[in-house]
Image (cartoon, rainbow, N blue to C red):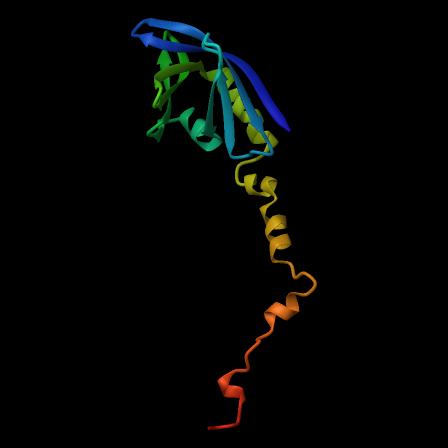
Amino acid sequence: MTVQRELELDLVLSPGRSLAVPARLVYRSDDPFAVHVTFHVGSHAPVHWTFARELMVEGCFRPAGHGDVRVWPTLGAGRNVVCMALSSPDGDALLMAPALPLSTWLERTLHAVPPGTEHERLGLDQELAGLFAAAPGDDLYLSDPWPSDESSGDTA
């Protein structure tokens, strides 16, 4: 299942000055811990970022993250927004997303895959069971090719 949303963000250029940036928010149930954001900044190629969904959800309520990605709620230009500070070797960016559409989209992702159930979507248990399942001929490798010293009654 995929949950998508087109949203216009504000790229903050300086205090009181910003540029509208179209963005696509994507959540896929086959990648349940992540949210993907594609920014269309007017360059020849869009810019892709991937965040932990938990970071984005927490950042709607209180400051979250550190390092390359930080997210926090605030009041900007008289409206509730969620700020995203992104840092990479190519530069830094501060983006503001309207809080209501962003949180509504995040809520849809939480309905698609409830928190705490993400690992069930990865199929790790089935993969591990397959890896550790006995295959024909395994009994040859699991038996001890050398008799133990303790099993022999002979002494030299």
